[in-house]
Image 1 (cartoon, rainbow, N blue to C red):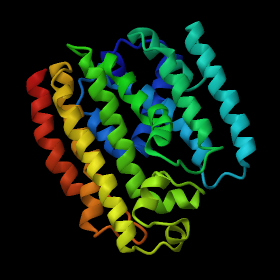
Image 2: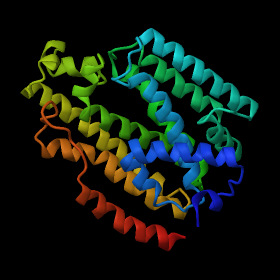
Image 3: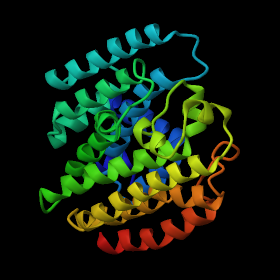
Length: 299
């Protein structure tokens, strides 16, 4: 059955909006999209809507091909974001992404505060280039990633409020894994997402990062960051069992594939400036096939 039909989405304009969110998901979030396919068809459009909102905002901020200045991007982000936030509060949207998002928020009663926090972090990307402490970084990570886990829980279904704690930790782990992989790309954007105090403790300087040559100091700093990702992943694991049975395989697969980025960093011997650590097609298949069997059995 078509996903939109399974989800009871009938309105033509709404279907177009959900289809656009799915397109963004399939185009830009290949691992995320693969994991989404493990959900029952009736749940998938709503996950696509969350992704579509986040990706559209992220594209305004991070499009390296854009000719806009940071100030112009800030205006565009604020104009679009404030309108969508207002739409969430009013319960109606005419935006090509906002329609699907507002419908999803209405159906699952997702707090608007999660989306306000996300927009705050996207704005920080245009004004903040580095974070001194891990606590400073977590203010950004909460809005850019942790809240996405919190947004997901009502759609996935949960048997206990503790599922939200786990979702927040897993969302954080996903983001931190991306930071480790993307140090070079983030430098291109003028940003450093590894806490400066922790880098300094290992003897890593700005100049050392800008040289983009792996040193023992940078390797040690990356190892500390990787240990944190794995610790958060381990702490979040029991919470996955608190989700609805038909949703667990999806999040288990996402956890293994997203947090698995740090395994790939180790496999390339931390040479993050020379290679992009990415999950191989074989590993995706190896994770996805058993997860698909579990997902189908749970339905």
